[in-house]
Length: 200
Image 1 (cartoon, rainbow, N blue to C red):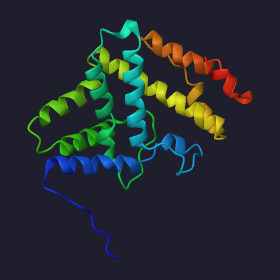
Image 2: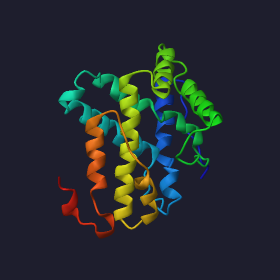
Image 3: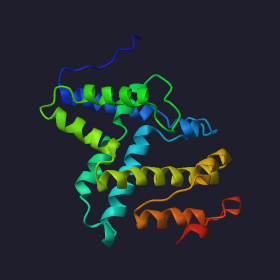
């Protein structure tokens, strides 16, 4: 049977189809550390998990009530959509993005929102996030790093011990609530791990 791809001239349908490609793009840092494809977090998983972590930690912390939860959610959702550009290609290692990678991802964002009346607003939001122009964007950047540590701990305890490299990296945030969550991971003896250690 010939493999055909559904296409539409409707920009909202196109956006939906393009974003769905994030389901197929694995987080390469875990993949390169031995996590098999069937268990490896995708960019779509990462997007949803980070959004939920950012939203709930901000909304449930009295010291963060001055932040815009709406903006936090939007930043978290738009942060990785440019990585659809790596569909059917090897995503670069999950480290510092080169200028070439940054431009490639931004070009994808421009393309994704083409045809929408407020395209420029989405592009401006994306740029604002990566430039860390406000407190909400800086908060989401720190949440993204925290989410990676949580997933690395999960993979390590599942037997993929090379993921400990992510936990060995220091974590420090300007937001005390995020530091407290990160400290919870530091206090776990992963080599003698038991679920009881992370109940608090």
